[in-house]
View 1 (spheres, rainbow, N blue to C red):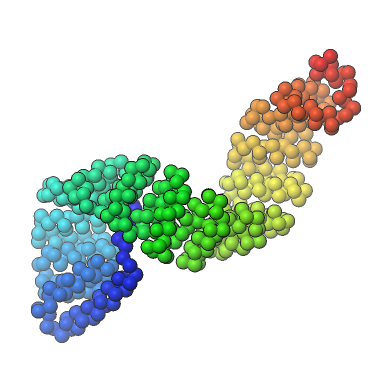
View 2 (tube, rainbow, N blue to C red):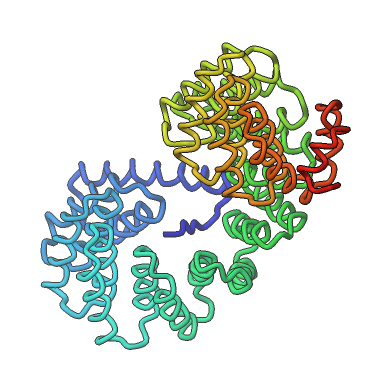
Length: 471
């Protein structure tokens, strides 16, 4: 489900929180004094404030106190259900909603809130029944349509959710949250044009909503409008400076535009907000790697690993950096660690095989290439490197089989045909060698020059030319 949050300034939140703390303190004193009846309305207002400002424990305390006095007040049972739902005590919440409905069976607000608790428990059928009951009582209840949309959205049934959201705004065109959820559903369905329209409509109503600008930015990235996306991420972070996802995606977008230094600043901001964000460390390292600053790349890949010691991609990437820095044993250690985390990833096996080949460990390299080929049987580069390793190890028949795999994947692979020809000459299979040479020359005439440089004595041989059919 999407996460819509109304935005408040930190100053307003701080001031409201201080006022609420004072009100809670005063109302608790009233309850302790026993002189409560003149303050009932005040305490009821406080309960609503506790709901609005997510002070559920405090709200529950006051609600329970009032229920001791007014046990048949359906509104209080409704409030208690809402507070328990907020505390994720869903079964208890449903019991309270049922109690409220036993006192006021046709209360649509209670039915809508009950459906939310049922949905939170995964009781989708019951939640839908509660909302259908609301529509029986009030066919134009926009909250019921909105909640039905959310119910389907949570089950990833986005196409079914959209008509309910559309119905809600046909009843109330100013229902702000609906536009946000519509944007989310259309995005999930890859209908980016409609998604953008919905988010823009949402922002028309709430232009200072950081999440709205962020989501619009994501859609613009997906449609390739990167500069416009950066503007949206800028607006999101100007509204909420600690919006780490906006900084993160701005960094990714800047990196895609080649603005690497600015991307670095964004990822550093993410890390400042969340010092344990392993993906920010990883992306920061990737940018340094792209800049050729391998020392810093290693540093930040290491930070990513420190935050998540099972971070497969970070071990693999750090291994590549160590390899480029000539620190082969450290690279091999990282590739082995990556394989221990995800043994079914061909890239890790290939990286290990390439390094083992560079170190002259041909037998180990062959084993690693074979494992990579098992995992990615159509990986041309894996088979070609395996064939070259077999060739260097003088394992001629195995090399021929590996080159055949290359030709299976790419029948016009002149390099594999030429290598097969050389092996067949070594094995005294002259006709097979000539056949391979003919095919290689036909595909890539430059192979002939390479052959003549490698075998200068053969190129003038009349027998050889006759075999090629040239005389």
